[in-house]
Image (cartoon, rainbow, N blue to C red; front, side, top):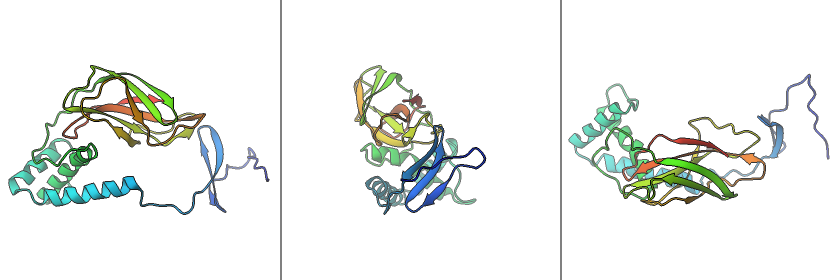
Length: 218
C-alpha cells in the first residue's frame, strides 16, 4: 500500500479521487473512503419534508386574522420577510418556524402564536458520555415540568478538537414531557474512540419554543 507523506513545501491534498476523500481537520490531514452511492432520501429528511408540507397546508387553511397574527409574531421575533409585500407569506414563515419543533416533539399543530419570550432554561449540571450511543444529562429542577421537554443537538463527530460552531448541530433527541434527571439521550451520531462532538442542551415547551442553550464539548 502506498504511503502518503505531506512535505512542508506543498499544501495537503484536498478533494476526492478514486473513491477516497482527502482533507484536513484540527487534528491534521486525513484520508477516508468516500461512501457510494449516497442516499439522500434518509428517514430524517423525509420526515422533515412531510412536516413542512403538512405545516404549509395547515397554515393556508387559517383565517386571515390568524395569518396576520402569525405575521406579527414573525416580525416580533426577527424572522426575515420572504417578499417585500407578503404579509401572509411572512406569517407562514413564522408559523413554520415553531411548528417544526412542535411536530418533531410529537405535538399537534396549534393556531395561536406562542409568547415571544423563550422559556426559562433548566440548570443543566452535567453532560457525560455513557457509551458510543448514549449521552446522560443531569439537570434541575427535576422533573422538568408538565409543559417542558429537554433536547440535545449534536455535531458530526470529528477527530481531535471539536470544530462545530455555535449554530451547527443536528437534533439527536427530544424527550417526552416532564422528564426526570438524569436523562439518557440516544445520540444521532455514534461516538468513536478518540473522536469528539459538540453538544447543545436546552428546554423546549410543548409549543415548540426553545430556551437558550448550554454548550458542551465531549
